[in-house]
Length: 169
Image (cartoon, rainbow, N blue to C red; front, side):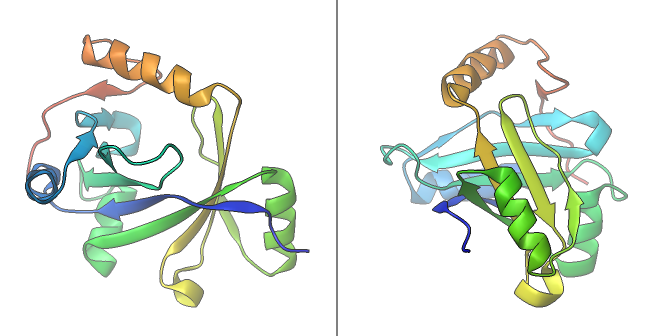
């Protein structure tokens, strides 16, 4: 059995200076980006970027900058430098995909998700050069996400996320 996927959903990219990366990418391409947010318990800043006018369902970049050196993003930058940390594939059935990955010998390390989005992550750096992630969305997730983004742009903190101006170390 192979995992049923619609392809790459998003790619996690870690950098030391998120504003600098966004500035260069916005000069090069016509992009849609979210304001930079923080999820303080995890110790990182985050923004997402898509190419403007891209078809719905096209992969996006999930961009991270450490807020502290001892965060997961800080450790990845220290150990491997900036670059891709996770490649996330959209799957039709997360539990079946996770079961198949386990049968293939992959070690699950996390099931961090977000409201309406379930994820499972694997420690595959040695085998693949990046961490592997599967994601499954609940119906209506993307519409709800747009509401959340509007609330955050209005200054609200939603599910622990809030837009901020990152501190560059």
